[in-house]
Image (cartoon, rainbow, N blue to C red; front, side):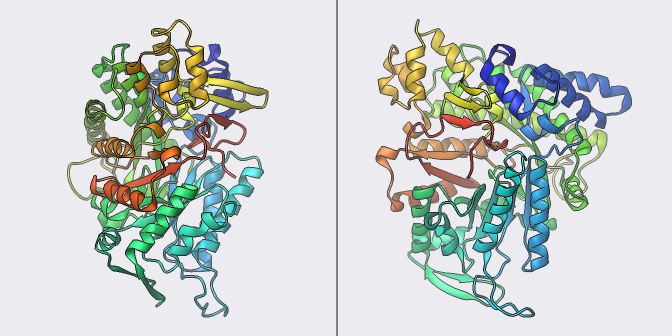
Length: 564
């Protein structure tokens, strides 16, 4: 594995996203972060655990989230993801706006549930007039996030969530189609029920209602078509399957899970947050695809302890968030580099053997994470809201984040995605740099004397069949995400979800040249629900090089997207 001192692109990511003043290497970042987080340990054990934490980070076996890497030891916020629910009052809306700004100030992102707000045009009792509705207030949050970014803060991502039975849901779904620039740094998500999907399958009507008394009725299939059309045109809304999410709610006595963080990998109660980190899978995989299971097991247990400690030393945006987060102590340990491991193993992403390998690795991580949280509960006590099942230190331990920035620092593919952009142009203050997926580069070096034409072809978005100097079997392994059938991408997401107690952030990339109809996309939405996914996102890009350029001056630290 190349280190960042010898890789200008990785060094640029390090310096732009996580290094503190005076730091120039990941080793230095790892030492700072490890010492800060180990402060949660008993005094006699701090040095030992700081050393273990530092080693795991420095060797890139485990990397905590970008906010943790950037802020630990500097008095900052370590949690990356948050959720807030709005009540139907001006005080609640503007209190949440302030809290969202504070969260963004600490490099976090927040999912905001708007369904309690009255629909647009509803009368305002005491003040008179009429409410502008959830879509207008979502724009307020988007503009605030944009202004925070202009003020020199790290760009943050927020997510606006609305239920499928809210009277303004059609306006919400159409919002980005009708005004693409209206919501800078804000994604849109619809909370979808089994009832809507079943009604659409049966061509039944669907009732829109609100507690204020507002009601309407539309065809369920028409709403699903509106959703599909907006997804194909804009990539929004993402979909959250709320019945599937609620079925796994570890603390139902505290309330229903109505929101997730912005990327959708962790369902959260209002005011909750989650600390994230990811296992770099290629660090445990030999060139022939052999997995070092003992090393992986040790790293998972170290990572769970690190994340639980991070909850203790975190600087919270406010006392209410601190209380809600400590009450459930949710962790989100995920992975990155799955596509690299499949490449090393010679397994095409869309084959059943690839899903079996992913399930085996993720199942091992699940087993070790569960054992680690049980051991921590024995030693430190269970999480305060523990209601059912075996004692656990943490209500959840696993969530698969997109790792968009983190994978650049780690030199590997993002999350559980197929290859998206294994060759990326990074824009920095000093010019442009070429970043290359390290396991892919090493794999190419063993198969061709001149990898450059292949890497150039990947950067240009050329179809896998046109990549020069490789066998047909090798070219198949280098298919980009939009060359993988949507059904296979959904199957991989579902296989991963079965090993995760949180959720899975994955975007099903669609082939621009063979884009589905809205009716076909609606069937894939149904399929994602039937497979047991907790949510689904689709994206049909305008050009195959769209993700091959990332501006480190403005990239969101959670997902490495350049927004608005």
